[in-house]
Length: 252
Image 1: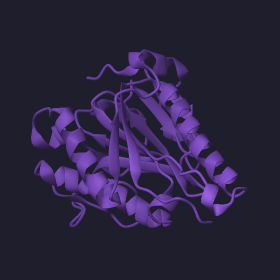
Image 2: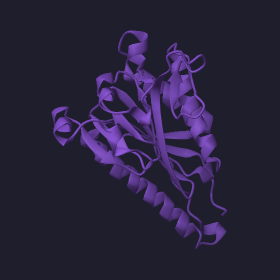
Image 3: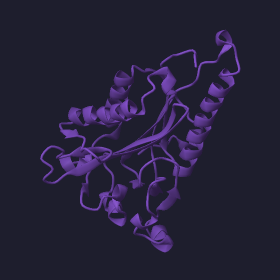
Image 4: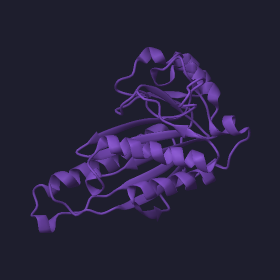
């Protein structure tokens, strides 16, 4: 399908936002983009509408999410225990197994029409990973990939004590993406003890704070990740001050 290609990406920082609200917002942006593509199929080439691209940054209150290929028994808490930990739980439509989101963790949700960039989902995933790897290098941490496993890892070469520092899970339909990545900056790692993260029970989870010995300024990490994502995808980022609600702009 021919369409008006562009690499303009609306950047929105949603702050600390409830997972369900962010998920609903993603779904709306995703659905609007897919609908534009469907309508463009009915239009002459010279009257087609450009599709929108978005990059959302946020943090979430404590929450566990289970992907389509996940197993419920990888959540080690019952409903009462979830309430005691002030955590929520959702089954969602991304790939992957179970993961945790919480304060101190940088979450990035690209809602991109890959027809504006490249139609290769594997390349898309590698670029997300590479942006995180480059971001970690900016802070003195050497990270990489482990064959057969998702996300970004420390001690990925010798694998004497491999530690996952960034989880990934995406959805794509008609080359439109949603969901994304979660980088542990200053996250409370105790919350990972209540799940089998991503279904992997023989490898540890870590954070930038854990590895570097002190908490980081999360805005500096956000700035680095944003820069690397923009460079890899050749994005033309357009800052937007509001996402879906001004009351969700509070950040840690």
